[in-house]
Image (cartoon, rainbow, N blue to C red; front, side, top):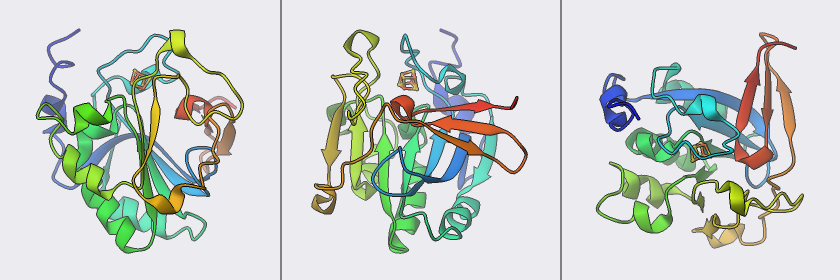
Length: 210
Ligand code: SF4
C-alpha cells in the first residue's frame, strides 16, 4: 500500500471546497435503492476487497471533479429521480461534502441512501472519517460492511452482496420499500456513447467500447 493510499485526505484536500471526486453518475436507476434514483459513485477506497466488482474505484487520484451545486441541479432537473444513492469507492471519505449535498436534496423532497465499506459502529466511533456523523444524520438508509467474497450471496432477490453486510433503515417510511436486488443489472447508454453497467453488487462499470 502506498503512503498516499493510507492518507486519502491528502488527495481529497486538493479539491476546492464544495467539490467531490466522483467515478460516475447516472439518473433513473432502479437497482441501487428504493424506487427510481440518481446514483453517484465516489472515487477512492482503501479496502481492496478480493472480488471487488469495481477496482477502478480504488485510486484516490482525481477522476472527475464536480461541484455540489452542479450535482444538485442535475439531480433535481430529472423529475424521475425520487432519491439519490452514494456508492463507490468509499463515500464516507468525502462525507462532509456529501452531507451538504444530502441536506440540499432532502430539503427538495428527495430521499438519500449510502453504501459503505465501514460498519455502522465504525462510523459512529471516534475513528470514523471526518463528517461521518453529519452524513449519517441525513441518511434514510445505510448499507454497511465491505464485500467479503467468501460470504457472497448471489441470490436474485438479496439486498446485499455478502452476508456480513447489513441494511439499516433510519427512516421507517422505507420499511416496506426494500425492493432492489443486488444481482439485477441495468445498462445506461450515455450521450457520448459510453455505457454504464450497474446494479450487480451495488457497483458500476464504465465501458467506453460499445
Ligand atoms: S467492494 Fe466496495 S469496499 Fe471493497 S474495495 Fe470494492 S469499492 Fe471498496
